[in-house]
Image (cartoon, rainbow, N blue to C red):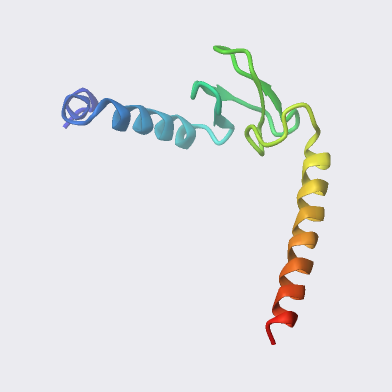
Length: 97
């Protein structure tokens, strides 16, 4: 069975997901714009990406998690939040004993 035959059999959303998966599988640097879902080729050495279709910026590694901030800033903030959450969980667990 050829791809065109499969496309006729599946829903449009399923076909779009398949095409996206195929693109990302074909090239390890393939990323999908989190805003408009356009496939883009990225470079891990330059993680800030610009979508060729909608023009919005996103990160090669973190998608749209830290628009306007560096990966280091984002990762530091996540680390700090994780420490706060762990401390809160520990304090709740101690109270419940």
